[in-house]
Length: 176
Image (tube, rainbow, N blue to C red; front, side, top):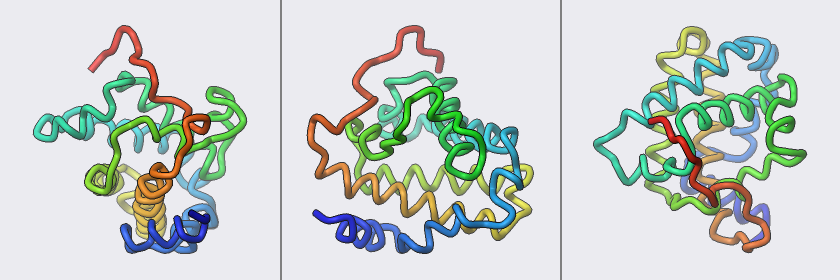
């Protein structure tokens, strides 16, 4: 499947085009300039608080069983900072390539999980101290997250075993 076919599949599932999703990366001032590292840490914490408290949807919580809440927050925070205009924190920890699809391919993620993930992220955005008041940034992020979640689902169907990274080990000392 070509990159364009994957983008089309993600658009059909999410209702957001690749171009619309990319607007979050082109905001002026950048998202990093708007909320800084502290704001991204807050967003990741709000999001994972929702995820790890979602005991009504154990199937969804099980997706995150290979890492602790603290690790999940840290990885997402680093990715957000790097992606949205800040320093390369994710690269420092995980290496040169973000490989977003490859890092998620070992998890049991389908369209239902993508939608549930987006639902929690939208709630985190609405309750964020700065993003809740910044409609332009919040809408851009909602579109980015919706498209990206569905792109991961579409692309993961075509991953080869040599393209996988992450999600293969259960971390010791898990703190829920």
